Length: 176
Image 1: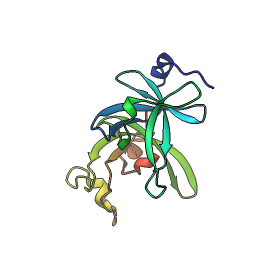
Image 2: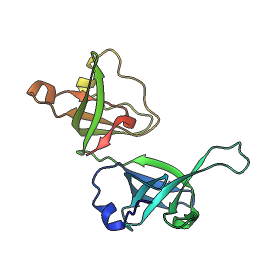
Image 3: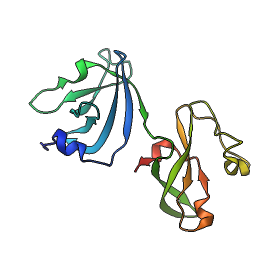
Image 4: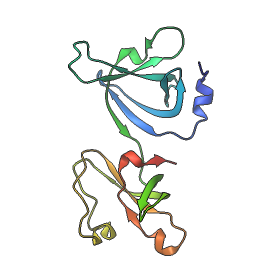
């Protein structure tokens, strides 16, 4: 089993940060460490510095959705972390002005793009048409997304490419 301490976990600067809401009403800001402890993914609570692992639980009757809970790593069994609370919602925590990267595919080539978040778009909304006019220059922007998303200005190598605005899928974003 991999030994992962709170000290080493806090030195990890990659991995996405999430705001996690639990069924007991509590919330925590947590970082996915992109590491495993045994067979489970490791996370760190950024306020308490507690390292935990994520477990998928199957509803007891087998018909309901799977649920997520965090556990304390170590030992032979699982000890529930955070009082055994079940994760109710997880949202990506990227702030305005933050730097993100994503994988882009066009014309048969794939590359990693990096940019700065220009606008945080709330669930069910489209980007601000008055502020982000370049995004609306094409004939189709898309439909509102059912989760928070981000408009990003690419950090290009030339002045022309540095002005390019994107509305990438959140699932492809990595916070830098």
